[in-house]
Length: 270
Image 1 (cartoon, rainbow, N blue to C red):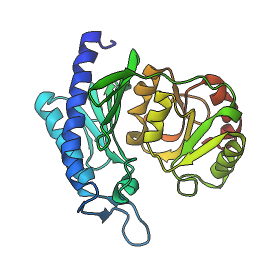
Image 2: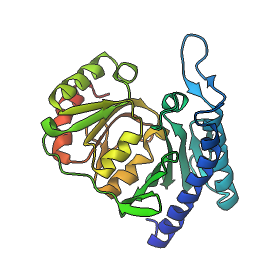
Image 3: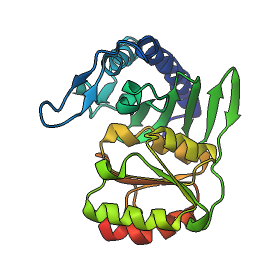
């Protein structure tokens, strides 16, 4: 059964609280002693900081106090009742590499599933005071005491598009990199290194297309209802809905632009 508007409004208000709690754990450590560790160990680099861990702990604690029957899927502390009716999907600091470099492009991603489906999501950049939040009914930006509706912009041609990905060499395999290179050659402008902040910019109508691969569910789930509320699309490289485990992803503001990009992406789709 779909959630009632009143119930969605309740969780929307709570999502704002969760972002405040995460910010309280993150901001004192940004551009400071953030306690860097490497989850991958010798031979690789997968950074995690005390900000990542502290923010997820703060979110989980607040949810457990308010809704003790809810479940979690989180990057730092794994799964807890992932088959519950309501499940919070958490990436406390998406863009940890940007965080440790002092760049304000990291975000806090919080999504809510109901009966296995994403229904509410937020992308928060607390250092610059921006919270992008939405569900299928609509999306908005809360910033500096103002609330502004979010809407994607029309961009039917890939040649007019501003596109983004995090790091082509890190994110894409050989075939995937070829697809990205083809799309980048056709697009007007490409930006790198924005992580999930690029998703928010599609919702805000300043970017047109974001292409990623190898994502975990916490990297993308919060964006699905947010982009839907702004009139955008989130699909895999086949043009189908993103599955429950992440993977290859494209976010677009215009269906026609997405369809052009999918011509190249489908050749490397898993």
